[in-house]
Image (cartoon, rainbow, N blue to C red; front, side, top):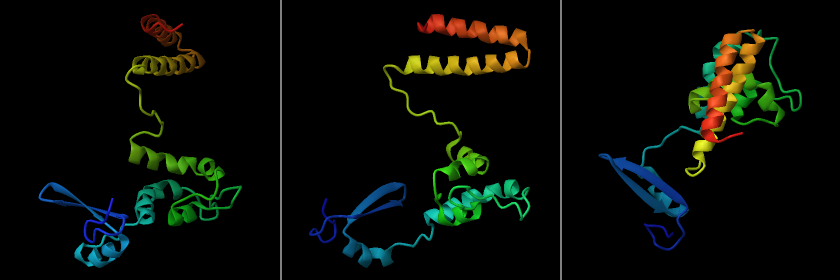
Length: 169
C-alpha cells in the first residue's frame, strides 16, 4: 500500500483516529509521518510504562518479602525490579522464578491465568465435554484425597454421564 499523502513511498505508519465515533485510518510513509507528527497529540505511553503500571499491583505481594530477600532468577540473575523496568525476562527460568508474582497480573489482564484457546466450530462440542470431564476428574481426585466420598461419587456419576452423552470412552 502506498502512502496516502505523497503516493510515492510504501506506507509503513498506520494512524488510527476516532472523531465523533467514526474511525479513520491513515496510511503514511515514514517521511510523511515525521512531517505530520506535529498534527497529532503525543501519547507518552510506552509498553514498558504500561507493563510497569500493571506490575505495580504486586506491591503488596512484594512487600511481604524483606529488602534482604530480593527475588532473583537462579539462571540469569534478573530481579523482579529489573523485569519491571525492562518489560521482558532474561531467560525462560524467570517465568518459573516469578510465577507467584505474575499470576495476579496475568489474571487481571486476561481474566484468567489458564490458557484455553479457541475452540473449532465442528469439533468444539467434544473439546468442551473433554474439558468438563477433566475438571470433574480433578475434583474427584481432590474429594478422594479429602475423604469426601459422597462428593466423589457425584463427580464419578457426572463423569460417566458426560462420557455416555458425548460418546467418549
